[in-house]
Length: 112
Image (cartoon, rainbow, N blue to C red; front, side, top):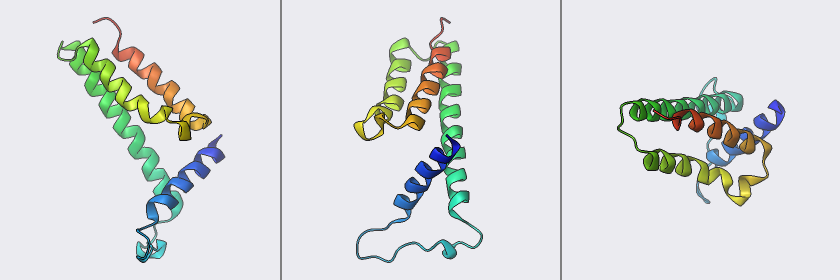
């Protein structure tokens, strides 16, 4: 599974490095010491950090009564929607991410 994640992330990074048609592409040696694996790991860390931050904030706001059920549900829907798109739906790594998001939002949605 880790190989699948790395392969998936490598494709994402490759796509991100492609510039508009007719422009020069980004060369990995433009940034000394920064390889594709470093970019992949940085993206993974960024994803985890962002999700954790959003869910921590949602949890704090819920406990203080500042985030309603409807608002928390809307947050969940907005984070889940891209994961359910047809181009991602069959990807086991995306399914795993969705499962984790479901589990984490279940904690946020527990009764106050």
